[in-house]
Length: 181
Image 1 (cartoon, rainbow, N blue to C red):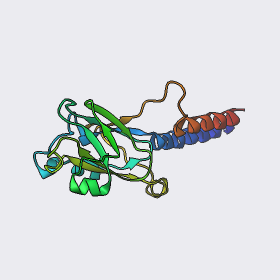
Image 2 (cartoon, helix red, strand yellow; image 1 turned 90 degrees about the vertical axis):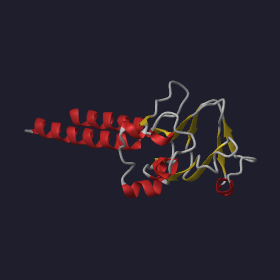
Image 3 (cartoon, rainbow, N blue to C red; image 1 turned 180 degrees about the horizontal axis):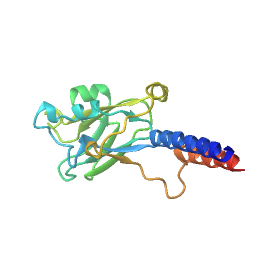
């Protein structure tokens, strides 16, 4: 009976640990949820704002912008420059056609097209990153389908920090070891 009880405890610990692990991993979002979505929208329903409002972004997540690098770029700008579609003084400027931006703080991020006139025609997006405090109250980010352009972030190969999930796995291994002994 004691052996069966230990297996039940171990199973419960593993289940909840892997559930937590899934909620704590950084995610990579394909902007617009599809390839080459960084473009002037054909309709309001096709706007990037519609896409971003359906997602919950967390600190550590990344955005991937895909676009024709010979014709366009991505600018991270202030709220005022976003509203005015001002391309003259970006916080960051990205080009090349395949841009990854890591979301390192909570709050809004304002992105506009670097191509003159595209922003005025709707090629812009606000991404709001929720705070860790807010995330605890809502229970983590919801799981999204691959159609929404999301995949787990790759683990660093060397020199990177251990993700929170790695700490959870280490804790689980130590805890399971104490049950087995």
